[in-house]
Amino acid sequence: MGRVLTLDEALAERERRRAAGETVVLTNGHFELLHVGHLDYLERARALGDWLVVGVNGDASTRRLKGPGRPLVPARERARLLAALEPVDAVVIFDEVTAERLVTTLRPDLYVKGGDYGPGGKPLPEAPAVRAYGGRVLSLPYLPGHSTTALLQRILAVMGTPEVGIPPSRHHPEGGGDE
Image 1: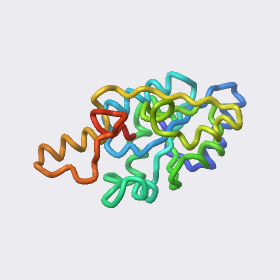
Image 2 (image 1 turned 90 degrees about the horizontal axis):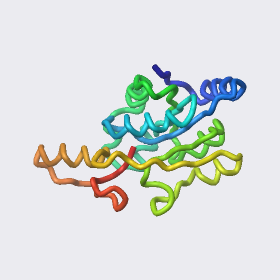
Image 3 (image 1 turned 60 degrees about the vertical axis):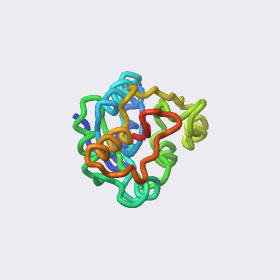
Image 4 (image 1 turned 120 degrees about the vertical axis):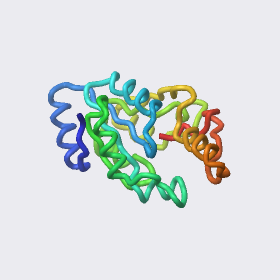
């Protein structure tokens, strides 16, 4: 079971892992409503290294990026849920709009994002920072039919509520692809 760490705690643990010759993998996202797509993604990310750190957008950054009424679940709760998942070793909450500071501080060997980023998708703002210190960037495809936005759309459809503020993504036909 993973732990929710401060950035300083994660950095200290990252240094211990580096000294032991372990591969550190970092990913990040909002992870508002956990679903099997998240678990699949995190399992595949964890398989790429020895220590998986998940950065979670804090409440302020989620609100800035997703709009009013978000996040659906507070960051501390999202972090705690993620830390309880078997593939996750550590969770760090960050409040910036991008994870650039998290990346440049932790300097993971591998920075992993979902399939809606990278070639043919959304630009990954953290990629130049990762490459600047010699790290690698990898985009993992999503489990088809599983995204937070698709889940929200299904909930709203069942409730008979219009899909206000939840547009389908051009990169993820089931909607969203957001972590």
